[in-house]
Amino acid sequence: MATIITVHGTFAHFGGVPSEIPAPGAEAQWWQRGSATEADIMRLVDGADGCVRIERFVWNGDNSEVERRRAGQALCRRMKALEQEGEPYCVIGHSHGGSVISSALLEAARRKQPLPGLKRWVTVGTPFVSLRRERSLFLRLTLLQKAMFVASLMLLLMFAAFIGGEVASGNGRFDNQNWLARYGIYTLLMSLPFVLFWAVFKYLDMRKLYFYRPRIVSEARDGFGPRWLGLWHKDDEAVSGLSSIGGIKMQIFHSTFAVPFFSILSVFLLPLLYLLLLTTPAAMVGISDIMRDRVYQISDYEKSEARVIAARQEVRQLRRSLREARQEFESADTGGNLVQRLDAKKKVGTLEARLQAAREQMHAENPNLVPVERAMRFKRRFLEIDGRRCEGGSLCGGGRDIALNSRLLFHLVTDEASSLFLDDDLWRGRFGILARLILPVVLVPIVFGVVAVILVVLVQGIASFLSGLLARLLDALTWFEIKRSALGNDTETEVALTAAPRPFWLDQSPPSLPLELGEHITGYSNGIAAQSLGKFRNAIGELAFSDGKQNAQHNVFSYLTWRELIHSSYFEVPEFRWLVAESIATADGFMRGAALEGAEPSRKAAAWLGTLKENG
Image (tube, rainbow, N blue to C red; front, side, top):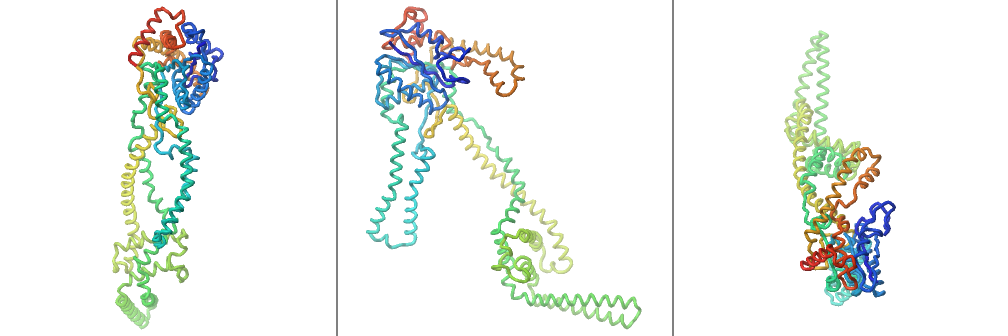
């Protein structure tokens, strides 16, 4: 008795339940019971000492490296059982079924099982995934292990911080050799948790990624490599597509993709900065303190405050008296009393002279009158409440009074903006008042407009740089995930690189199928594709008006056989099945069946097999 194990590939159960028996009404796939492949192998191949049986190895068929390795472990156990039975066997794997076989053989090499009963293993259209383990042990750990690893470092880090603090404080004990020896011992003790965790995780890592060990790779290559036959079509979509995915460098994100978004944000940057400033107590207190100490220099002018207030009150009192005297003069003028008119006019003249003298005296005695008054006005508005200084002599409310904060910022763009363009003389009189009202209305929008333009230009420059940086980063991450998904790499410890028509542990890729056989497969696939295209043309209306997404998807897949792809067409071509039969029949423990012996297809299959071995 000789056994042939068939291993299906990825998505072999698409839309169905994993089973070696075809679904009701469905055509048997190459590896299932009742398939044309099964019939041909049973007819064309015999065991050296009896009949041949076909055993189907069924796994979930997910595009998952983890699942392929798990299936490989199960297949290895099955091959070990056949070894114990002492009968020869061959294994045939299509697509990632070949990857499952590769994992099984690496598992056997790890267990030092040479599998002498395995006479040949055949892979058909298998895109063997090439992986690289993460370079550092930390990156190869799971998330939970990473957390435990970092936790193990905490004691050592805390001790290191303590030592650093001691050194920075100039503690003289480090000059003592006994203390140095003691701290050396402490360091070793504090390192023990980290060393222990590192050793445990290193051991687990070596067990998990055993197939990277040179010994196992060497044993697998020397022990199983000579028994391998790799069959693949040069136009196989899976092999060629996944093999080229590693070298794709197409740009997905344009270097300026984020610039419009940041540019729009820059338009609203001024009001956002205003709101941020308004609601940040520390910033508002800081602004107030700068205005108090550097702009208004309140502490320098406080000694002049009483004199200025007294002089200003005298001027106001004289102005009030002058206003009353003018009213009396106007009343006497309308009443017709000449004496009263003369007295009233004289009084007005006297008060005007006194007012002018008081003003001149006030400015003479207080040459810094305008700065002092501005400083006192700022103090009354923002640093005092009812004549009492606020806490710490700083901004009242501690920067948490939004109303006062808003008045302070408004003060900056009115009084301070006007002071930049008005000298002390222009601040006097009605013109000064009018100028202080008009200047902010004209000046502030212009200044803010210039600032807004500068901000937009600045933000666009920064956005261009960040956008280019993000584009490169997102391109790298996107292509990394595309390769990861396409290659089925769901491990946490390895990086998917590319795919090749040979396992990574073998040195040389096999040649593609001979041209004549390859044309048979291509012609079959093209014929199926033409039939499917015709069915699609007839079903466009049905697809367009299908009820719901799931129903539409079902309709699409009902018109596809997947034999439209070369990758899925190998076993549908009789000539290829004869080649597979020939490769098994010529292995030790097997022999040609009567139907295979001497037939014309057999001679072609033997010639193709000879060509593959010569060029391999």
